[in-house]
Image (tube, rainbow, N blue to C red):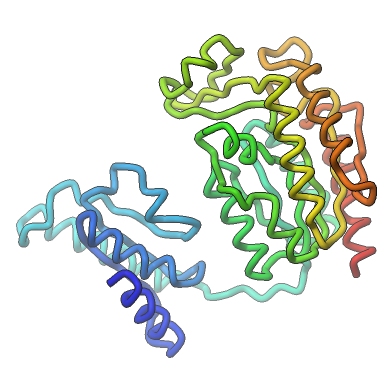
Length: 328
């Protein structure tokens, strides 16, 4: 039923008879409905009314723009509560269809940039510089699904260049962290051959949510509470070396131009002299192993700056622009 619903939704969309999609159900209805929604492109309004919407919806959403409405009650006939809820949900999808301006046409090259709240200074600086240079920038929040969505966008041919400021999802994939974007992170741009600048942003920690999920073996590590529900654990020297080798292997397979930029004064907000996750020895282990394993054609640029310094953002953007010009 999931496969059939997906095909029907695609067929309706291709024939111009689908402007929005809505579904209601429990666990099976949510699985079937969201499968059809995931088959549709970004921008098509998608509303899922679900009895399980208060749980972890990542397997149902994937990388798509699906809106969930928690039904609160079970859907067993109509009553004063379900009537009101369903009317509001129907209004949500109708309102979204009415408000949809349709695809926007732009001839500016599109840059995919990975981001995270802790390095917003670098993100905002890089975005402004890129936009001033005539690029359009789309940012992906690297919480697992964000990195996956970035890879999907590149794979679909939507992206002209990548400024990968935050690559910590690779660390979380290797060591069971919350922000796991899957085994293919850092690979799509290489396969497509598009220019990319890679930065070890926030690569120095493993994310756990809730904090109670920190394994017993890591409880003695330096821990920084990002929010009450998110704890980040400092990666040690061995883990940093391991992720350096993994990233080198991924980048070595790339068909396009790459520059790796290293902020030697710290990879994340809490990784700076005097801050709780500062560990220059572990960071150096990453750089050393990366340098040993990267093929000679991939350039490494080390800057005496922290990742949040404006100097760092400007240099990373300048290097990406150089690659884009050479590729053109």
